[in-house]
Amino acid sequence: MKTTPCSRRKFLGALGATAGVWLARPAFSLAPPAPAGRVAVGMCPEYGPPVVTAMSTLFDQLGGLEKLVRGKTVAIKLNLTGDPFTRLGYAPVGITHWVHPDVVGATVHLLAKAGAYRIRLLESAQGTAEPLEEYLLQANWEPRDFLSAGSRVEFENTNYLGFGKKYSRFMVPGGGLMFQGYDLNHSYEDCDVFVSVAKLKEHMTAGVTLTMKNCFGITPCTIYGDGSPEDEPGLVPKGGRGPFHAGNRMPSKSAPPQVDRSGSTEGGYRVPRVVADLVAARPVHLGIIDGIHTMTGGEGPWAPHCRHVKPGLLIAGTNCVSTDAVGTALMGFDPMADRGTPPFETSDSTLRLAENLGVGTRDLRQIEVVGTPISKGLFKFRSA
Image (cartoon, rainbow, N blue to C red; front, side, top):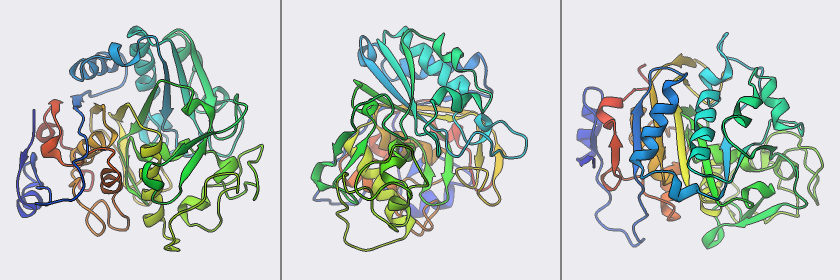
């Protein structure tokens, strides 16, 4: 169903009691309208067997997976931010800030059932070049569960060259907001379908981290890390992504150069632009958001005042901007908001930047929301 437009005053005044009323777009724009994709929302109160049923329903509401993946190689970028050992209290990482293994397993199972030829599970494991399977084992995940969920399931740590012989270059259409292009692990090119599986979370730097911000982690720290060599990619990933967060150094000279000349070292300026660049250069075909259990206050347990919460939500969509706009609204925020307004108090909106690049629309009036209406799925993160 499509949502109903209304004024900003009415949106902000009614959000605490009633959801489903949204901002109007500017009356006039020189830019062509950004594409919109259907977004499916479902309620799922707990992990376990109900996840497969709930996700199967979401995919059916999107028109089915078969026409998207049959006979194709599917790359799945997981959201495994941080490391396997940093936890919020005693909660497993999949409960709070990693996507849960049941959501990953259900995704693999349903893709295989729809006829995917090969499925690759990908993540840039923090600070290491060890196999992704070993990284998962440290979080008490069982990689064999994913192998048994479908045929030809593979793993790759994309934080370095991995199994490839060279990095793949993705240029940003129009020249890029922060960099002309990005050099990535081969798995992001050697696929027919790219899926981003994210967690429903806020982000201390970017406001929210959903299917688009999840793609920030596709960049290898052998090139974009603080400890990467100056002239060429390193052999082992070292450090965080300083070139993106603060611009305290540039990537290895082997990669496309920075085009932004503002000189800004503010993460709230740089990170959203890098994210918008990445989803324009490496399009997302299917976005999935795990909001069954998650946390408020930030992207990981290191965020001040964070808390474990249970929204009981699953979201899937065929356009990453539209999917994240619906996810943002379900968190109790206005997807048309920008810097200075929650959740973008100290950052530019990745939603707006990606929309301006033509990736997709954040305007809920233009997005077909199916399944659970936003008004019924609303879970206000700031007052939970």
